[in-house]
Image (cartoon, rainbow, N blue to C red; front, side, top):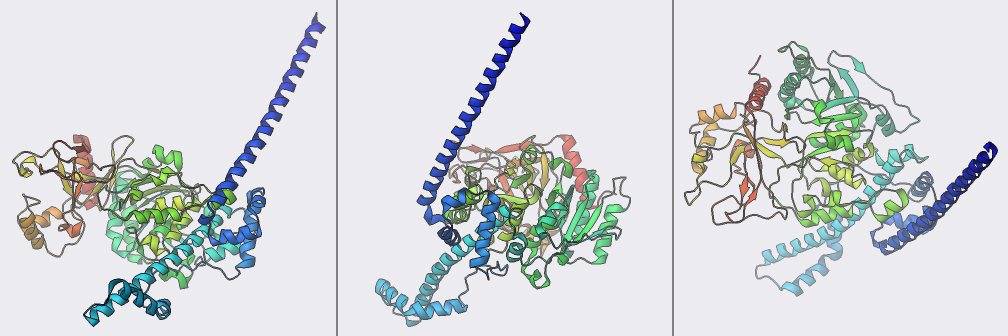
Length: 631
C-alpha cells in the first residue's frame, strides 16, 4: 500500500508542475499580447498627437523610428537620445541668463519693425482707418506693431521653453542611465562650479567635502545628502527674525540640526545667531547650527542671475539633508519640526505642501493652459517613461484661475526621493514667462514637481486661515441692523490648520501683530478713522502698542471658497467672498477672514476653530518667547 500511495502522490506533483508551467506559459503569452496591444495603442496616440512633439523629438524620430526606440531598454534610449543631441546640436547649451523676456528696445524688435512695420501699418489703417490726430495715430500704429511683435515673440519663446524643459526633464530621468551624463550636465547646468558649498558649524568648525571629477556634480549632491534637518535662507535683514525663530525652536525642544543658507552674512550676525542657539536660555535645549555659504558652488560669473527668492530655491539643492523642512525666517511653528516628517501626507509621498489663502484673486485661464502645454508629452512618456499630468495636478484651483494656491513658508521634502523634481524647480526660476506669474517662490514647488512628471506630492487639505481674536459682534452690525451670520478675524497672520488632526501647525509673518515697519502710527490712526476697522484703536500711540505686541490667538477661521471661484453676491449686507483686504494697514499685510459668505438664502460656510485655554496659553507663551518678552 505504501508504494501505491507514493506513486499517486508523485503523479499529483507531476500534474501540479505541468499545470503551473501551463499557467506561466499562458500568462507570458498574454503579457506579450498585452504589451503588443499597449505598444500599438501608444503608436496610434503618438501619431494622433504629432503636433505635441517638440522639434527635438521630431528631429530625433526622423532618424530613429519610434517603433525601434520603444523596443530598447531605458538606458539605451537615453544614450541614443543624448548621442543624437551631441552629434546634431554640438553648440547647444542652456543659458541661465536667457529669461525669455520681450524687450521693445531690443535689436530683435527693431528688425521686426523694419521687416513688418509697413505691412502692419497698412493693415491697421485698412481695418481701423486713420486717426484725425497725427500724434495719436502714430502712437496707435506703434502700439499695434508692439502687440504683433509681442505675440510673435511669445510664440517663439513658448517653443524654446518647451524645448528647454523637455531637455531638463529627459536628463533628470536619464541622469544615472546615460554614458554622457557629465557632458550633458555641463550644458544644462553651466552655472555649477563643481564645488560644494562651505559648511561652517556654530563653533567655526568647517566641513568641506571634495568633488569627484569622474561623477556628475548633481549625483554627488544627491548621494552625500543624509539625515533630517531644518533649512532657512537668510540675508542680513533677516537676522533678528532668525534669532526669534531659534528661540522658538528651542522652546519647541527641536533636536534636528539647522542649516542657515546665505550668500552674504557678517561674522557679527553669525555670532549673534550662534549665541541665540548655544547660550543658556530658560533651560531649553541648545541648537546645532550650521552656516552654509553657497557662493563656492556657483560660478562667479553666474552669481548675479540669482535673486532673493532664487537663493531660497537653491537651498533645496545645497542643504546637506536627505529630508528637510524649509522655513522662512519669519515662520512661526507651533509644532516641533520633527512633527512635520510624521504627517501622513508626507510619509506617503515624501513631499508635503501647504495652501495659501483661498481668496478670489483671479488669473487668466490661459496661464493654466500655457503651464499644461509645458508638461510631459506623450513622447516623453513613450520614450522615457515620464508620466503625464493627471487630475492630481490639473484639478487644482490654479487651473480654474486662482492666482495663489501654494504658501511656501513651510515646505517638507525628501531630497533623495524627489531629487530630479528639485532640479526642475530651480530651472523654473530662470524662465520668466513662468516665474513672473507667481509671487516669489510660492507656486514653483508643485509646478516643478508636475513639470518633471512627478505627482507624488501632497497638500494639506485646508486652505490657509486667519488666526487671532474674533471681532466683537457689537462692532459688526449689518446695514439692516441685524448681526452678521458669521464671525470675523482681522489679522496679518495666515495660519495653517492640519487637515489630519485639526491642530494649528504654523503661521506666517512672525508673532508681532504687525511685523512691518510702518511710516507713521498717526497715519494708521487717521486711516482707521475713515474705515473704522478697529473701533478700540483711536490714536497713533494705540496703534504703536497694538502693532508691536504679540498677536493673541484665541481662534482661527478658514473662510469658505466657492468651488467655481464665484462670489456670493447678496442684498443682505453679508460678505460676498471669504477674504477682505483693507489694503491700508500694516503695509497691506492685514486681511479679514469670514466664516460665512452669501445672503440668508445662499450661504456658504467655512470653519471656525476655537482653541482651548491650554492652547491659548501655549501660544501666548510662544509669542512672548519669540518677542523676547520672556527670559
